[in-house]
Length: 349
Image 1 (cartoon, rainbow, N blue to C red):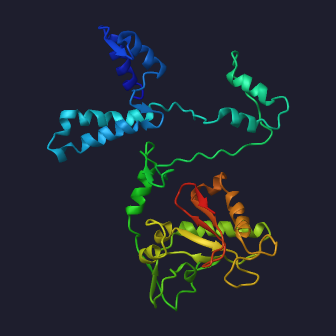
Image 2 (tube, rainbow, N blue to C red):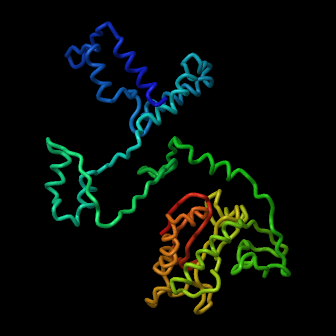
Image 3 (cartoon, one colour):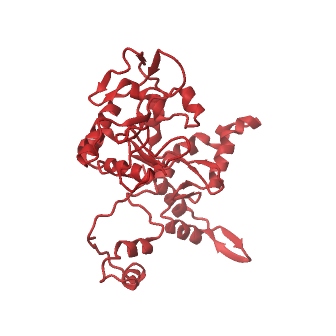
């Protein structure tokens, strides 16, 4: 499928028998020879596309056709269905299992900085010289590679931009966010001290919204399992604590909006917790974990690193989710966010 659009273009171009004459800047250009050369250089990808998909001009034209009915026109007259059927292929046909590097020379120099036998001049000659030969060089230390897949981002113009979800990663998330929780746990003064796991009580995950009893919350079992696992690793590293202080667990949609959080926060689905260690002293503030005499984001970084080390281990795959550390503000101390969204995500200070 990925090559059908290219094959169509190739057949059309190669079968053009009439040498159309064009004039550009008073110079004659014959399409019969110019078009094949143009498309050969593009590997017969459509001229209205780039590696990122549709060009903005093509996207604007498509949007106009889709809204043609508003002007009393018929989108079918502009072959809308046929064009839209080609779009998924257009978005994917530039991908062939490789990743384009924006600054390959700089990357190569960085990776080989500890290889004295590969100075900058040799690297540049190998990549840009006349006698380029593919060569494998083993690095002394492994290098972590993080691939970010964005469908929404803030541009340099400070506006929100939306891109096509060509790998359908957002579909699963969107479907999950549309599903209401199966039920709520009713919390009263009589049951709020109930252990929901060996080291966590029901009341630790209550929403901070003002109001009396009974209270209600949603709590995912997988979040509890993840917190127990993290707690075990933290203690194994020498940071003794019986439980985490859960600064924020479940949030009602009302409270979540009131504090200015994102609309579909994992907290409102009972799958997230903002945590810190509060053992010595127990004062509702992060402990001085790195013992530098200050309570700040460096202490949150201690917990963050312990959790981050779990990623990539097979036993941790069921607990993939978000991880972020936050600095101290006038409203709260430093803390770490964890959730069980099912895929790796990183953000924060």
